Image (tube, rainbow, N blue to C red; front, side, top):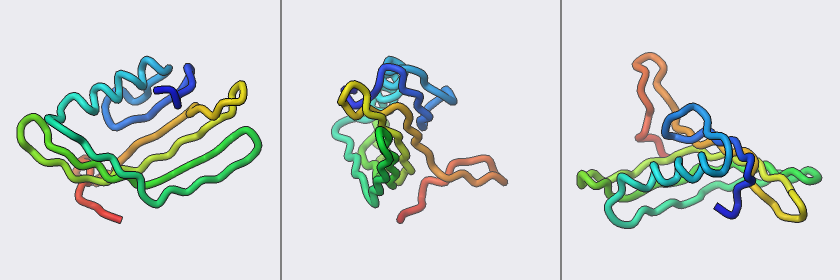
Length: 115
């Protein structure tokens, strides 16, 4: 959590549509980890970094793998984008967005895509 600015705005996989503030982001991470029974692997791939003054923009596709409490193994890729801002000499995430593609015709997430 030390990477997140106190006023971070986050669009994450779990509801609601938007988390505001570091406490909201902490709840999002807690909700994401809670269903897992045992270790969860989160691998960052294809990381791209763009800098401009006191802003840094990053994006990547990330691999999530683990076992849910109901003994269901997850193996999916998510898209991640974040904006860092230098605040008092420290680079902090002020916005991040995690998503998966959606099939708009059937209204469901598409979780079986790989890079």
